[in-house]
Length: 277
Length: 174
Image 1 (cartoon, helix red, strand yellow):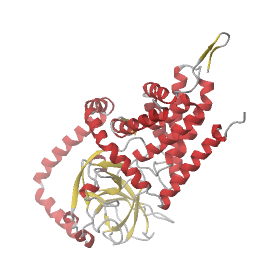
Image 2 (spheres, helix red, strand yellow):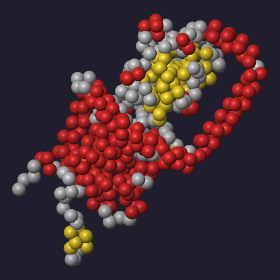
Image 3 (cartoon, rainbow over the protein chains, first blue to last red):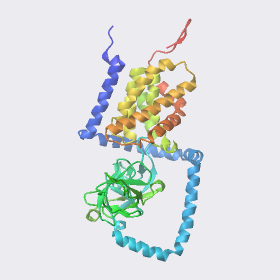
Image 4 (cartoon, each protein chain N blue to C red):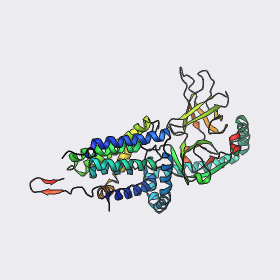
């Protein structure tokens, strides 16, 4: 008896691949409610997920104790150093305050007055598909919208790229797909910075001319305009101005917010006041 | 229980585990690829056709869990399941270590293929320098969980397929 075409592995494989490509096209062309379907799926499993997370907490702690002992130890050391630094900082508070005021005056920072929602980081998505992404415990129920900028008091962190009802995913500034318009404080030159997958660094490689004077330590802030970020949010400081570039410049910026040690974040709300800034 | 009902139950349970406890089980930032493991094992236990169908749905579930464009994992997983199914006949009598190595290689290949397809669709996922390391670590850490997952997947996808037959002359034949 001849075999049906659906019994042939190659035919089945081709049909399934065609179905997957159709779904991908549907998502990229936006002609099926694929996003809503995915969000709905995550929303449905979310309550059970939270219960399992809570129930397996001791196991997760043991795992971290075994496999991340060095990191926990380093974190402990870092925090102790931080405490020591803070104690020392108290002594030269006066001088620092003067410096801070000068810096704030220099960049005209008013980003601390933005209306934000404070969110806690609850982890990273499963598997390895999403690197440079963290999950937070606030979603559409808290008024968050896709594309909203995410900051800390230290500066730029990333943006929301997937928002469910009670949680969201934040794409960090170091993600290779991250782009942000920035301004150099001294020269007032504006360009486009991007993540490159390296920890704590973004690259400014578009918009800055070869002969622009850029110095090490120069403060970089968001340029605003049509960007999802209001202007003057601190991005970081230049650590390599790539002064000897012949053709295209690739300026390295050390992010001011420490993305490796985040616990809480501020998501910028799209209020009229914020949009005006 | 109906096979497809079993598959549905398995996939929902796997999705919950992948997005809860397995988000924390990481070594140097690299996590377990539970759903990719299920796709590989469905090819191993279910044969090329059943394996392809199960792994396609596994891929779709993974796309939902990790918020990837719907279809990226579903495009890769059936290919891996069919490849594993074809190789399975050669490795069935091999020692456990060799089979574990095969699973690790399958997971690593899956991670690399997903990154490659993601790149084609404009999703830059990894540094090209960190990808091989991520793939290898993911392969090893995922293989650690392969024994219990294999039993569950075997129970899920093998119902209705012919059982092993003991022949008098040639030992075990499938």
